[in-house]
Image (cartoon, rainbow, N blue to C red):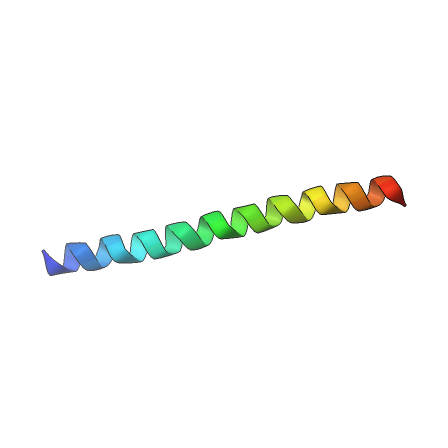
Amino acid sequence: MLGFVHLVDHFFFFGSFFIFLIVVILFGINFMWEWLDYS
């Protein structure tokens, strides 16, 4: 049971990190398009 809880904890940590990474990439792409538009 303890191993399962540890696995879920790792899953949530990597899941939140993955979501954060996707958000950063999306913001970066959006910012790049805006910058290309104005240049």
